[in-house]
Amino acid sequence: MADYAKSKDVRLAFEVTNHLEMGKYVDTVLNHRRIIALTERDNIGIQIDWFHANLEELNPYEAVMDAHPVLWHMHFRDSNSLTSGYGKTDFKAVLRAVKKIGYDGYCTIESAPMVPDADTAARDGIEYLKFLERIVEYQLSPDFPNGYAVRM
Image 1 (cartoon, rainbow, N blue to C red):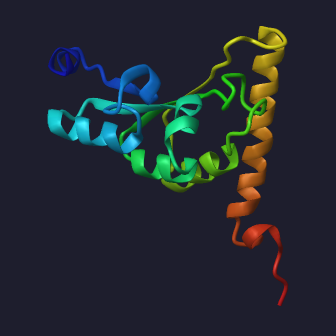
Image 2 (cartoon, one colour; image 1 turned 180 degrees about the horizontal axis):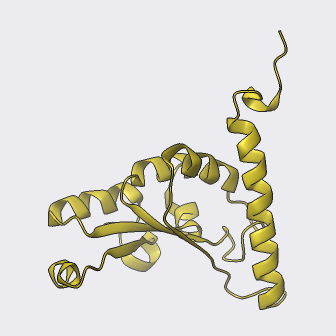
C-alpha cells in the first residue's frame, strides 16, 4: 500500500488507537514508530487521536515528542470522546509540545456525539484550543518562565 501511495505522491497516516479496538501492537505512538520503521517506507506517518491517547499514553507532551517527526495529523477529541475542552485531556501539554517541534501538520476537531449540537461543539472546541494556544505562548515565552515575569 505504501509503495502504491508513493507512486501517486500520497502519504499515509495511521491512527494510533487503543488496545480495546486494535490490540497491543498499535496502541501507542512508540509502537507505531516501531512498525513504521519495520516497513522501511518514508511515506507513512502517525495520526494521534487524543481520545485513544488518553487511554494508552503516559503523558500527552511525551506522546507528541515521541511521534515527531512522523506526526502528520491529530484528532482533537477529548477523553470522553467529546469536543476539546469537554473532558480532561491536557491539551496545554499537547500544544506546548506541538510548538516545541514546530508542528505544521493537520488537526481536526472530533466529537462523538456532537454535544449539545454540531455547531456548538465545533465552536467550543475551536475557541477552547485558541484560548489554550494563547496560554501556551505565554508559558513558552522567555519573558514569562512558568507563567511569571521575572524583573531584575
